[in-house]
Image 1 (cartoon, rainbow, N blue to C red):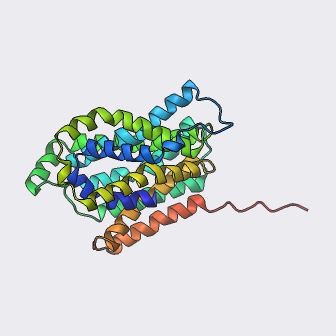
Image 2: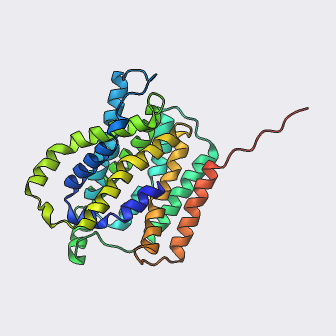
Image 3: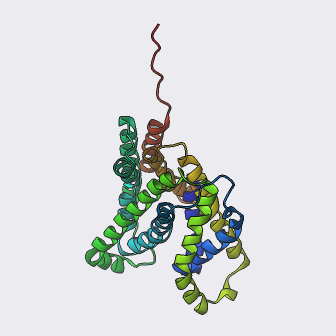
Length: 296
């Protein structure tokens, strides 16, 4: 999650250069080439069942494809402050979905950790005063008046997509290894984005893209499709989904830290308080439980 937040913060030049769906198609394509050897079925792995195939499709469709569309479209229609507040609900959504669908028992201190995560990132979001990207104040005000409700609804959809990604990923780790999951859901992402990618690539001037942007694209694709997914799926093999969901607070926290350290942005007291509360939630949810005393 810290790596996700880092590459999100550093991928602004890519979003300014490539259309969103073309960027997604290139990302999945580069990731597919890098993970081609991960597609091979390892010895001893059982054949894919219909249920596992369906879960792989849903993991890619909800967690990769639909999440990106809902997130970017939602932010364009509402304010960045609203987006941050709504996305702060991801840990709570993961905990609820894991309780409903995986029948996981969520310990009280994990619920407290979830609350800290939501409060911390909510404070971080409310401490900012931003308008939607690429919009003038007048357009932002008009958007907030007319279509903010739709933007907020799309962001709620993005929260549910990301929470579903964590829960479905936990289910998949019981049947497949992390590398194979990473490669298969990336393959589905490439298939879903190919029609849009081909259409946009036909009209795009690739010759105008600089060498530095291509290098950044390759690093972004490897981080987004390969490294982070493998790390997440490997962790989910031994960590309950509700507990893992608390770690999503590191996404906005690391993105903000990269903004301060690499992009020259400033951080104030409210942001530092938000970081402290959010990280306290991670500690509450992940510290090992105290062992029960033995009786003589």
